[in-house]
Image (cartoon, rainbow, N blue to C red; front, side, top):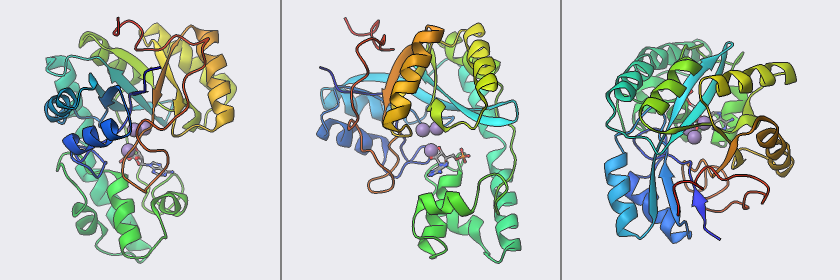
Length: 278
Ligand code: AMP
Ligand code: MN
Ligand code: MN
Ligand code: MN
């Protein structure tokens, strides 16, 4: 069976390895079909693709777009896109544009609770000046000993209601799915188990996603528990979505699982990669 991993990050967004090193790690872990899906960015794709081909992996062009839906942040993965599509590129420029200001506001909020200079500190971890993210803040807060690890940071800081959280408006769901589809790609709901939505809101969300042409959800992802693999297998079947598999790898030793180290999709699911691999 093919080892397929269609979700991970490089230094072009909030991962700690450069695109070619993420490729090398995927190959070393036995991945056969691989996508790099940086947040709101495709500029890692050329190096990732070249490295993947060198290493004998099948490469899928991908990204992960930040969306605001009903006041919540939702991530939409785009797979098999043309990363040179102008609509997509313009959309990504727009989606990234608020990050700088947001980061300054986050740092100001942390300064108010007695943690100064976090903006400058976080910048040391940023690989792409257009993509400063909460992950970079989290790594710096670990460095200065405010928290033991990155997960602990997100429990105490940077999330709704906690110091360092700044509400933000990302792309709309219609925009993100539209950009992906116009670039020839498939839109996939990233880690659905992570969103704090009621059953009714989830139903509305999945229906709306489908109306815009969204076609798949992640079922087996590093963000899901085993119970959630089963839950989202049922969801995929109920709504007629294809299913994806991806680790959401960011950094060695930061969060489990590693690239390619996930269970397979249930046999009853239609893998999102079915049509691409003859
Ligand atoms: P941003 O796009 O700046 O809002 O940052 C979002 C990123 O923060 C996600 O893609 C994750 O990499 C990271 N993140 C969010 N919540 C958590 C969490 N609870 N634990 C670890 N990382 C998280
Ligand atoms: Mn991330
Ligand atoms: Mn995500
Ligand atoms: Mn991700």
